[in-house]
Image (tube, rainbow, N blue to C red):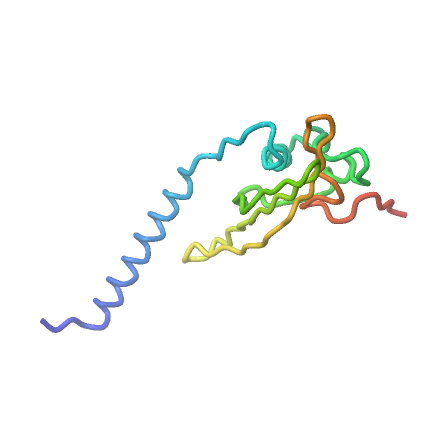
Length: 147
């Protein structure tokens, strides 16, 4: 059977479209990981969920008072609202913790491409509540006053 190059190309493109559609359905039906409220990863998840939902005051409450970051800094920050954030690891050492996440930003290309970056959150246990310290992503320049 002699297949023309156009037919082979059409089949290949059709297969790619089907695979992209399946990947889109699978990724959109993934459920959110339910974490223990006493764990540092839960604090990071709560911070990011509040931030992505535009609940900036709630997100800012997850940041340690010792940080230079305030709700004003959260108000100024931006992240693409359809970013996908995946927990990579979480570790504790006494009253400090480190939570690593991978952020995937869809590029909306024909093949469902995405850009990824990893971020590390540092936390401290404050009377049984894990709070983010330093300048947590997606914040970059807390405490600066515009002149």
